[in-house]
Image (tube, rainbow, N blue to C red; front, side):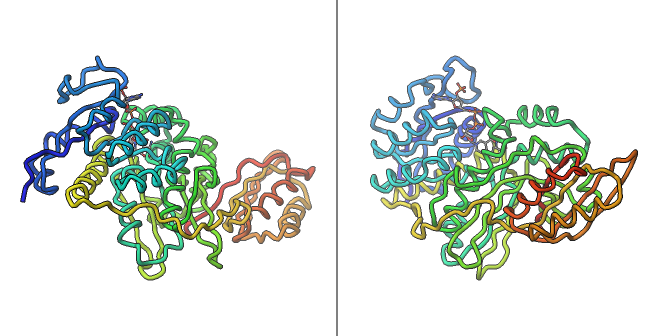
Length: 430
Ligand code: NDP
Ligand code: HSE
């Protein structure tokens, strides 16, 4: 039975994502109504610049007063696609105070304040959905939160930032420069308002925090996630990676400790073998492996950024939230019953590729090898190339604790024969 009275939607933000949400809501209005069981009406659009021409949007719907839009009394669902912390946070709380369920794509806010937002939604008996906040169009939040709710997730590893994958892919495949590739990603609508969030790994870390919370039923915040960006990755690193049959990706990796008593969460560039499925994730695509006890290894793949792909995830949430409204129900809220501590990076165990500039003279290799051994880091391979009394030494280790590797590097820097540590890169996916 179709309800004739429409569900009214306030669109907060009408930029790269919001404009596509509005377009699809208009062009697919009949299908959305049929799927929901009631028409959905765009009842207001809050923006910063009201005079900007917005194709397909009735200018009468546009306002700069998002709070007044939420308070006017007839809104059922708010879609927050403004981004950043404020005013997005205050607006979401205002929505809950006025009986309005929320769909958001705002990973920065959810990673910083997810617990309080979930608590406010729960207290008000409303929905907070955010599929678009992690990995763009890829259905990942809902499968992890609902489809895998009966399983135990032990590990999540993937590429969760489209902009940095686009840049790294261009640097690797076409030899493009970093800035040139970033400019292209920005023009395509992939980058955050401040692309530092992308290239310094904050965006991926926010997504990692959200995924860790869902995967391990615990609370993880942005600060809990170890983070390294990709601005230091150089053409020389790609050349080293190629020699090892690898490429370089910015990865988010979440792991449950073997004893199940803690978790780790990290974002950093890493070398991965070309044979690994993540190596062939190109442009702004994302891909995430989820390892669950009973299900085994699942892979989620698709467009990780961009207006239309992200709008797809937002609209999926809109349909779900509207259905819940009609059923006078709510979907699953936060599940954070385990309160597992998030360990520091020093506890992480992985392999390393270390590139050293050393003096090319007898005994140097032995000195370097001894330093690794003294710190309990076992060497897998060593490659040395010398010229003019200097040499480049590339050491690849077996799995070791990050703390042990840091200690090794500190000691190596103190050796007279080591002129410099050119790069340290983790090696994953083997
Ligand atoms: P944009 O910068 O393109 O759009 C932001 C929108 O918010 C603009 O319409 C802007 O108005 C409006 N806005 C800014 N400040 C205010 C304010 N104070 N009051 C009302 N409106 C305001 O961002 P995106 O669309 O790219 O991103 C939106 C959200 O979606 C962010 O949280 C982002 O992280 C997330 N996201 C983005 C993806 C992408 O690929 N772009 C992918 C996944 C998630 P005006 O138009 O007047 O400037
Ligand atoms: N800036 C983000 C990215 C948008 O590049 O992945 C999608 O969350």
